[in-house]
Length: 454
Image (cartoon, rainbow, N blue to C red; front, side, top):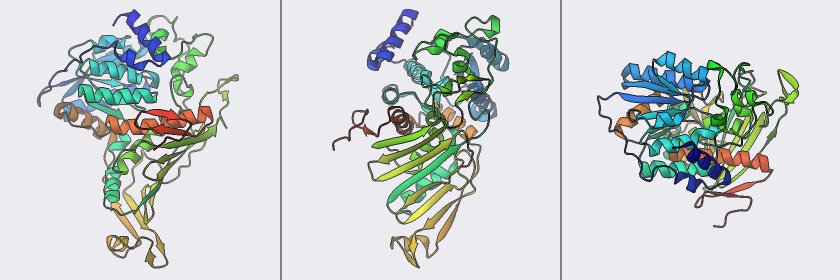
């Protein structure tokens, strides 16, 4: 794609004409290589910052330990990160992701860029016949979520959303408990994600020599990095802070909602047995602790809130309550309440942490079960412990994606489940920024401040 075409794509996205932008891609998607059981899978990494480099390492490990895969190219807009990836994997490197997507020998890509680039690169990759391991959050907007689901369906590519938490055993166990009717009518789910640390607050180290005027490995392609986001001046608008700490800014991220809540909402959708779109969302919070930049108290620390709460309601008559803060590390238990029983998946509240068992506790009045039909299921007990198998969720998630590239089966965190989690958290961001209760029209993928008519 020429630079003129790319600029046109950016314009269309900023104007909201995303369907027209999609038309700029190839009219007929490339089929991609058929990967045999003994063929080696070739992976390229787009975005080799801290997270991207970690994910690349996990793919490299999986490739050497039985998945028969290798990293053949890396890409980033920061030359130092490109050089690091080239050295680590003895592979090619580039500042331009389009060079990666145009390679016929690349079977799949890891997309670990800032959020505002996720959908654009993933959509182009699938049109080029590549499978996609797409870091969470899946994308930046609801319309992007819609387009990703449509493109997966049209191209039949494999897309795994990179929230490795969902490859834990507890969610499958919870889904079975709920499917067996052990809770009665589903009422409410709750979860949290709390932090109180320097890196947890996204205060990542800033390389002072790096930038668009940097020489050699210090060069950053700032124009490319901005991509579909609003254009910013590096020197006048805290470019270094935006680049290295992008999750603090609305242009590129939804803050807590997209970075942390995805690890809660995606597993919940798996537990429920049927991924669901919310019907109504409201959120609140603010910048309560981190209003000044640590290195320079004359400058604001962030645009996004450091403390954030959400209530989502679902059409089948249950709600999801979420709690998170960057300034307090005490979680609330991750659980699902039914009219007849409560299922606790993570008592400690850390959705990325291991819990050796689920706890299922019956709701009773005196010696009688609130839902009489559950007495037989509980066999007269008040509480049941359900063992959970511990595993390396990251290796399981990566291994599942690589296996699906061969079998063409649906991956663990597929695009449809990922989209339903994305809609909830994106609506939460919009609710906070607009100060409104918002409603979702599932049929038309539209958000409104008016209830949707049945």
